[in-house]
Image (cartoon, rainbow, N blue to C red; front, side, top):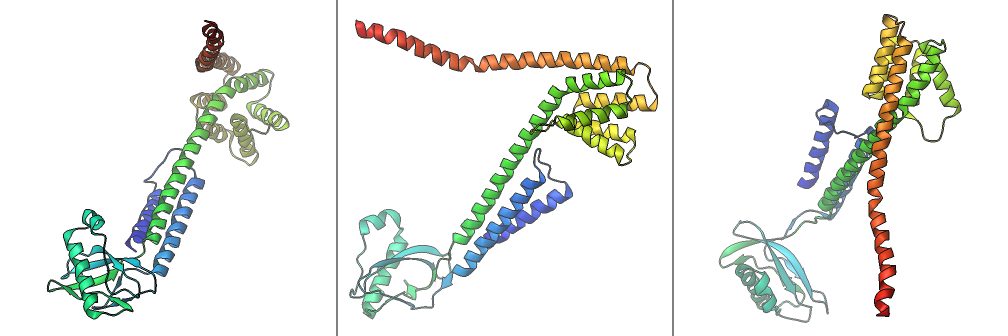
Length: 338
């Protein structure tokens, strides 16, 4: 039972820590936390139900008799406490109903059991020989003048189920964290790749005479028409910014939120340019945007060069394997012809 209490304490502590903001796991989303609590709580409740239904440790009264089954020999794993001391496990051999005594395999028991356990077995066999009851196998009330307390071990399936459910919940939590980190990494990578094209298109629209607000609306409308199955996070944020402006949020706040949601330094710089233009006005905003676009394209070229070098490095392994195959094709017939 204590295992279930410990599991409930752990779950409650995690819930309180998450709510208070003491635990911050990078990449973990709300869905992952939900699965963690759902699996751990339901698994612990199921284990608790198994523990309650199977019952805990059962203590036998002094001189208790275990029913013998006709034609069936069995073994019982019991706990015995000598003179109120710590309980130790003892495995008793229960003979079939026709038998009057039990013979143990001493060669095996001597390697596994301690001297006290063997003595307890002998005492139990001698006690039953004296009782000579073919229907019951009795548990001796005392050993070497010391009182014995016999009991049956409690079922551990419920505790095992609770522990496994907690481990499974932790596994789901780690899996959710890893997936969240991978999604964030893909998002950041996609934002960097889309930035040069986005800033260039925005610069062209502004230089053509559009206001910043209209340029955002134009880009959002074009994205909606050509939207593919896989979303582009940068343009999704532009669409969100347009919805915010339509709902009455000030442009300055919209641009600030846009930069924070993107989370990339380049997008924050872009948002800062828009905010400065809105607050102070800038005659040279088009030139500044064009300079930013050129720098973004240069950065993308460098990124593409790095990715190309990495791809070439990964191709070395299959190329070496193919070289080995070609050498085998050439050399094996030459060796066979010798």
